[in-house]
Length: 400
Ligand SMILES: Cc1cc2nc3c(=O)[nH]c(=O)nc-3n(C[C@H](O)[C@H](O)[C@H](O)COP(=O)(O)OP(=O)(O)OC[C@H]3O[C@@H](n4cnc5c(N)ncnc54)[C@H](O)[C@@H]3O)c2cc1C
Image (cartoon, rainbow, N blue to C red; front, side, top):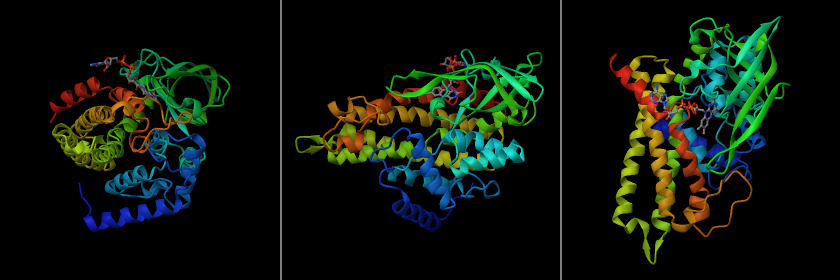
């Protein structure tokens, strides 16, 4: 891993800040971070980034990206979070985009990977099924080849933002007779296709972001297959290996730390600010140390992922990072709730409807935090549950 010298990274940070100051429209900038911007806002922001040549902030230059280093990407995410810029569509930028760049046909690259950069479309991930989450390879959604189309039947579940997406990348079983991993294929489908029905699942955070996706006699052209038939598991491993560093969501942890520091001095009881309380100050110091430790680990894991390091050590580190960072997301968001007294306990999502008016500094600093703390309960489940990550890491450690 190579860290850039401080001057270089400071200059890059100044460039990003300057860009955000000049180009982030006021109505897109969120005073406190929404969990996810509205689809039209996401695409609008993507087009603004692309007009500046920053449409692929996580991709190499060869694939139409910025070619930024790991540190530059982390600085970009942090500065966007501070400015309140919409977070990118991670399913597009971090999952299917890199997979298409690696395994896609020239047509898929031009239309879909290019479309992600241009801000043409939003994507969702159709992997999990009822009964097939951690044991993903047991999935049952079946695709049968008929002439130049696959006819697909089955069901997906927990499909984040399916109701707001233009396209879905899904895993289907094309051969039930071989070893379960070998019979899986990845297909791309237009969400407007006949045969796709999306039903909402409302979650404990009060939001609608999860869905069930029912698939009935959906016809997908063979040209929408990624890789060869039976390549689905190989592509999935590639795609999920790219996910560990981003699953840590370092910019979210950094945001929690900023908000805690703001509360520390701007809120308290009587004339005493929160920071004067030894228990609060100690916990804040612990969180700062932990966020810094995660930042170092993210840099290390991201550098390994970027270099295509598929060693057991890299994989185990990625699993450990996912576990530790998501646990920290939970404890920090909960501490924010606890530190905000009555105002923190008002649970409302920031991306649905009009938030209630709270007195300063609550609206700005902890608006929606109870809803977010509820959402974070799921962070140790999605992207691979903590139990499963621990199991993988421990089995890999014996291979060192
Ligand atoms: C908020 C949220 C968003 C999501 N978004 C998407 C999405 O966009 N697309 C998508 O495809 N999926 C999505 N998922 C699904 C997610 O990937 C699965 O929930 C996850 O993989 C766990 O699978 P499961 O829910 O079937 O639980 P199960 O696999 O049934 O696990 C149940 C429990 O058993 C434990 N367990 C399972 N296997 C083992 C093992 N081998 N060792 C030890 N413990 C084990 C688990 O840790 C868990 O505690 C999302 C989930 C959530 C909560």
